[in-house]
Length: 73
Image (tube, rainbow, N blue to C red; front, side):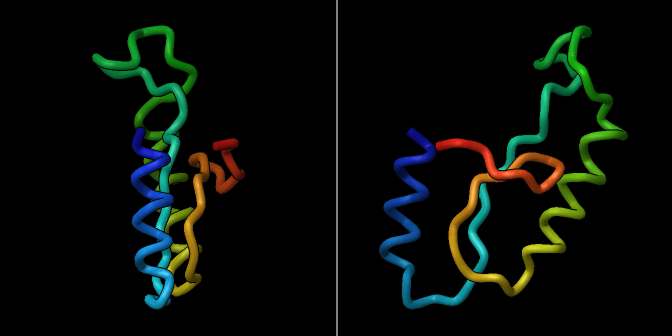
């Protein structure tokens, strides 16, 4: 559902030269992710921030993980 919304939004915003990202933070050990999560918050968040900063000023829509790898739609 979110993917469809973002793709639709990106098409309507094609004239704008902005970065649009969907981010997959990984399986993080949190209350929601549970104790079996592979990553700590301290491992996931810096990766997410690094990816966001690397994509600044690069137009288009991408779905990426916390390491900057493309996630299949």
